[in-house]
Picture 1 (cartoon, rainbow over the protein chains, first blue to last red):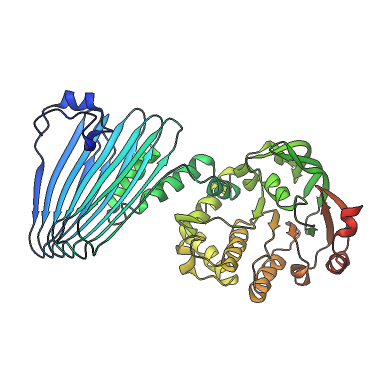
Picture 2 (picture 1 turned 60 degrees about the horizontal axis):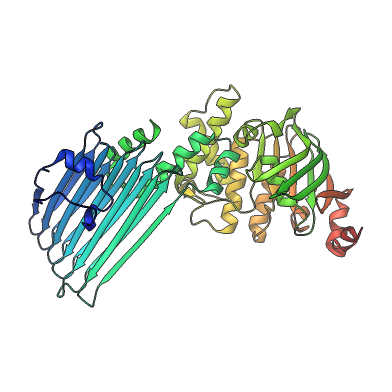
Length: 239
Length: 247
């Protein structure tokens, strides 16, 4: 990226562009190449204080290879994790991402997953919890090339608003040129379930504890395979 | 143990409870029956302190404690248990976590020592088996994937573990097959003790074949219009509520 992004750049539409400008120029994206049949696990954690945090990662996964990536975005006034993944024949990409924000934080996960060859699978599970006036955004593009038959892509995006002033954006996007593919996405934005809160209260659990239990439960799907990150996320939620 | 006096409550400004008076003594089991819309479920929610129900008059005490002055979770610690007609599913929170958190929250609120992990597991396992639920089911998220009957059994397990002084069971018999009904009824009967008052809210007489109440009350339009012994339930089953509604 050579020029400062603007609001008109789709992948930056919810960013804190002033923060981006202050941090300009951004470091080039890190690269990761997963070889044929190779299986890898990576984590990206942003938990710095007030600094702007921008992480970019370009990944290629060769035939039959796989990457499991966990992202925990809970630091920086502006935090952005951008991941661009290109999948070979039969490759697999699993992403579990959690965005946590309070105060005036703006945090986002932006993904592009390219099913460039047939038979590849991608699974993206994103959970966002925002409080106060914070903004959490997920923009995820899945691009399926013309010859990439039997592609299988799923995006599950859920956001929880803990305060009326908080904002969550969810933007799954499909660009499909093949005709024999399975691509599914679901996106929900909501508040804590009042029925569940009452149920917990009726058994003696105080509101703060009930809220913590439900919020922790909300993010578990995304960090199921990363207990250490789950612990850090829970510590943040309870702070 | 439970004293309700001239209780009045609104939902969205609409009166639902209209001067309800009822006393359930320690060791007693009372049944409240009534037609749809009489205010049966509202009574349960008002006693438990659910948001959205506005108490406009009257009083409720549990062992002398003013329940209406307490928040929902404080009422539970004071000894109130509401068995829900439609138990809530909570994905991501296991039954064991839920129950242990609840038990220890109540104990802390009462100034008692918390249950150790081992003590809690013994209790949970014993009560789950008593109600025909496996420990494996208690490891699963609260009520997620449970059948209607399993959810009601789970309510009974919670009641048994939490050991309330006043149990209000809202349509606990609905949606149960005959085997589950027997299991739930046994549980209610086992819980009958001088230390507990039980209020069964029910639409049908069926449960009362297995749990014989000390008193039966008829709730119509937000107030008790008739009270009697266990024979009143049978009479209502035969004649319906038409007479009471016309009165």
